[in-house]
Image (tube, rainbow, N blue to C red):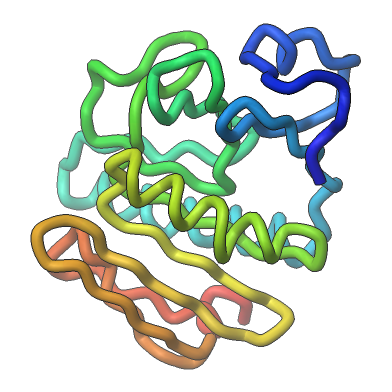
Length: 181
């Protein structure tokens, strides 16, 4: 839910939040973030490790960065997000503050309080910012929605038991239920 203090917030307001308080900034509105659950963190860890191991074994150059990691989507002062997992393949986008511009691949793990943000607000924001692939992993329904943006957009829905092809790689498939064994 956005805070109601002033009309437009900036990244400066995010950095002025009390220590330990996490929030995201989308189009000048601040959205507080609830602490993640155990399952949420386990999914972030397993997915990040799987993607990182794939990149390393193929001598790739992309970076896999789990939250909290700052992403300045539009390289402006009105948009700051912390995706659960960001895969960035352009090293020029990275600096000590975070990622300047859209990551190539983003994964969000849905929590009860983040559904509207993940399925609507962030879907639109990531698509228009230039993210190439976006996954929404929902532990409550055990489903994954995958979106591929670009010249030919595509959308699929899977269950945790399905093998899911990672679109930015030719031969990486992930089965969520296998990661949780």
